[in-house]
Image (tube, rainbow, N blue to C red; front, side):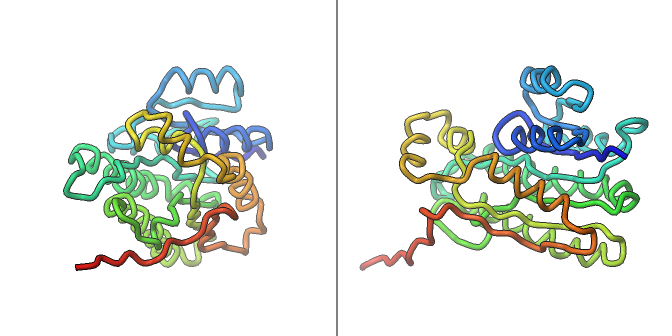
Length: 247
């Protein structure tokens, strides 16, 4: 029987690479995103294996409807909570409130709403939930108060959800990547391609395809195994030292 993955944020980067990997592996993919043109392009590429749904994760009403699909697209074997938003990396006092609000609404509210709504189908399939967190969940940095805070929430949410789902057969994994070269930094820097290129130059960062392979591995583990959390960093990335202010 063909399995179905619901992947949020499939219009670029990690979500797009994941959709491509699962379709290549014989799965059907329900893909969401805000950019309809990119979703339609993916449907042309994948054909009947892909259902494109133009949904903004900040629109909770639209998010909840994702769990109401029936018929051919009624089952969910994997929920990949990939969609996310990062405000700028400025200190909190210099941040624009609308971008902070968008990060909280996307990374927390939308994710929780979709996960709760999808639970009956995931219990029926004894499926898998993969939540995309970040090393920012556990490693603090200047300018990361809200983004890191949302990713810390995602990490802890998954752990507590595992407790709620004990005995259901549903698995929950927090994926916590470090530097991944996608549109993430481009968006965070307001479209500044030079700033994005400078960050990744010579660093040999994680690719979207690298993470898609990890998701594929998780989805195909024996059903009695659960990977609680998986932190992944490029070899060239390590932890920063403590900052010290001198009077």
